[in-house]
Image 1 (cartoon, one colour):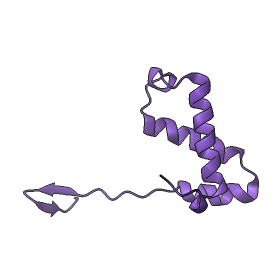
Image 2 (cartoon, one colour; image 1 turned 180 degrees about the vertical axis):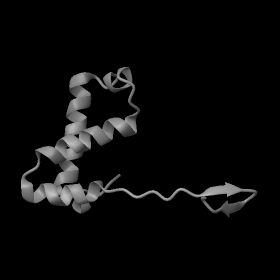
Image 3 (cartoon, one colour; image 1 turned 90 degrees about the vertical axis):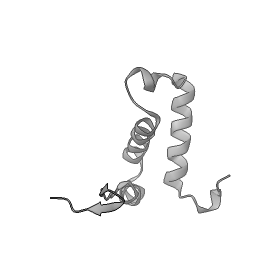
Length: 82
């Protein structure tokens, strides 16, 4: 169970919006258009961030940034990218 005390207002709005959309469209609609659940939840989050008041939107957009480090492995050792 998550602790609501550590969530920000924007996080709560994202969760609520996704739950409302899921209830309205009965969930399988996102599969019908070729999305997986992670992609669907990212779309919900972007929609909510776009609807926020400007002062809250800046903070929410900062949380949207992602960084991924991709490392190839061969025989149990990391291989340098060329």
